Image (cartoon, rainbow, N blue to C red):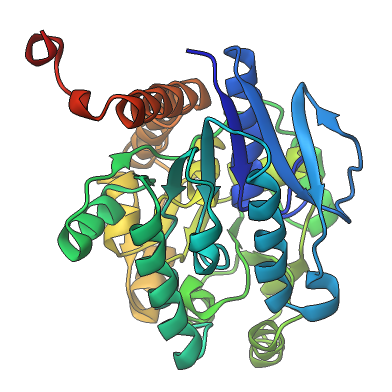
Length: 382
């Protein structure tokens, strides 16, 4: 069944921003390769102004976020939804719901509407209490208006079933395995192979960066710790000031559009710290696994669902310090790295993810057309 599919909820492709945009790149091109007609909505001021990209059709809609800040995202999503009403899509795939589900009454009735439910946005501590309440309402509206649901984590899937009594399809994100590391790229950062620790994250409280750096600061390690990410916000400036006297801690700023450099920093690190504690299957974690990093992760159900026993876990600065002072790259650690790489190859690879999306989308369209056949087995339909 060949479908017309509209993908909404991102700033657009090619990716110049984050996880959902990267995901939209892989999914849209993968679905086009399978014969579907795919449209991705882009901000009007996206860096790429073409009407197609790798055979994906792009629709540019006015996005006032650059003028209005976060509120502009609501206007952008509304503009995308109103445009989608005219397009006669078989399927509308909404990536996230934060600023779109408030316009649920405007979703086109004729299309099969599928939401990727993202993480538990209302739990993110970077938001004020009023904003957290709104995000919980937005989640409820997404549940109300969507026809079908996708959860990128088994934890999110369980949450949706428990809180809203709805079934969702578990389909994780994917990651691409790279083999183009270059040890000479480490020279720019003044570090050597396996002689530094690293984290790559946005400076947000729920990413536990301060906890990680507190633990490292208290350790007796003589290795450097590279903190990769923009420090322009309040938390970033606080961390730079707090650890200014620890010469081992290096704030590199963000590293953008240099995948070989990012991959090399990961693979040659002694330990890669992943502090994310809210959300589903985090793309940056999968990318660290695909880069063959040895990983220390914040101890929470989301990270354990992905890494299982193949990580060191921490939930306090003292546990971070103990990991730093007592971890060596020997047989056990190399087995953890290889096991995580195998997970990427078998479970979190893009071909597998795209096939699962295609299968689920087609099942949803068939069921919406023929409700009596709701995901029945062939025997029951006979």
